Amino acid sequence: MPVTLTWADDIATLTIDRPERRNALSIDLWHALRDAARSCTQARAVIVTGAAGHFCSGMDLSPDNPVVGRIAPSILEGEEYPAFALLKELKDCVAALTEIPCPTFAAIEGACIGGGLEVALACDVRIAAKNATIGLTEVRTGMIPDLGGCVRLTRLVGPGRAADLITTGRKVNGEEAFRLGFVERLAEPGEAFNQAQAAALEVAKNAPTAVQLALNVVRVAPDMGIAEALSLETRAGVMALISGEAREGISAFLEKRAPDWTVVSQG
Image 1 (cartoon, rainbow, N blue to C red):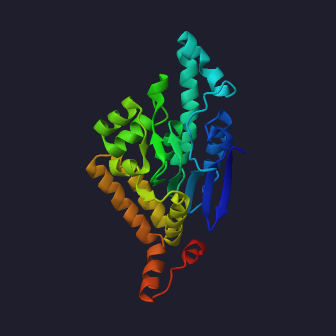
Image 2: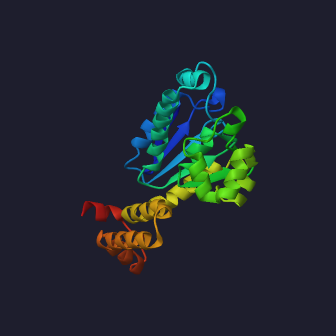
Image 3: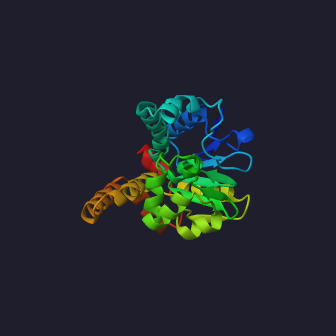
């Protein structure tokens, strides 16, 4: 399988696994990524990473990738429908990552280019090795980052920085990506997954309903006006307080013990 799904301590890890092509995205890989993401509904946290030292080198443009044949009529003859149909299909695959109900962490080593970066941008948090190679290079081959890259990068870094990165197609290392604001944590080379795993374990210690409620607000707040977002936050806060988790969490705090969230779920 081009994507492997493994579990440990209620944490799911999705590994893009086509090392012979630096984990380039074939249509089968896209579908496998979508299906794996949709199977993570019970996870407490999800890590997305790549095999053999690379996150993902972007779309596989080799002739043996069926994607190339499917969009050939658009590229060669100017037909719009094949391109529309393919982009809708692939955006549905990316959307599956954004719909995972728990926090998602992209652990980035090596190449994270084009569609690979668009996958990482669909995650909640990006953790990159300092020497990772990161960029949206689509304009260099006559395309654009059309699977959410233009929109998500702009929301993270602002239109000026997004325009600079996207229209030049330049690549940056993990340290510059961190300074620009679309990588949230830096890791030493080879340590991105370990750091993501540590963060995921921290998430898994916390109240699951509270985490999900807070994450729901964080994900949609940028699309809302301040009043609407604050109203949503208030509603989420009320739901957290009445869920039973606050009762267990406060009791555990006062009794100087670790909270047992399973008591809440069983109740």
